Length: 128
Image 1 (tube, rainbow, N blue to C red):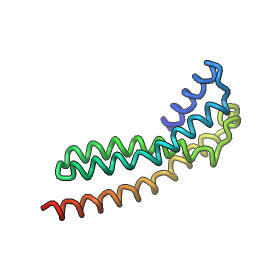
Image 2 (cartoon, helix red, strand yellow):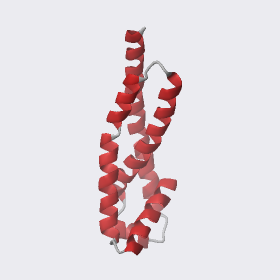
Image 3 (cartoon, rainbow, N blue to C red):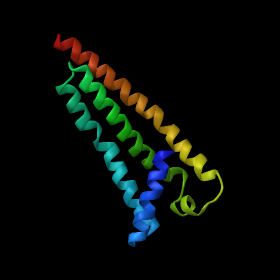
Image 4 (tube, one colour):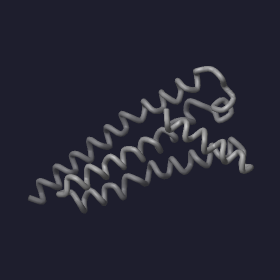
């Protein structure tokens, strides 16, 4: 839910600057989509370089999961909520939709982490 509060705050800030809600929503969605698609590549490169240092890999995995969760949640949000409804609706439907978008991201992160763990096992086995 903190992700949604951050999204709302960022979009409202951009609206006060003079950018429309729909334009700022679209820009935020594009940025999040690109980040969610690009961020695994530097992470995989980092893991391949530091695969024997468990502490570094663990810290980077936590940071990667936080960034990827945020970006994927923002990317999934337009499937459930229109920008006009996101800011004008007073009922709980928007909150439920935001929670659903957040819950949909968890299996995606699990799959990414599963493949990361398999890659680490393979690298450690080959490195020993």
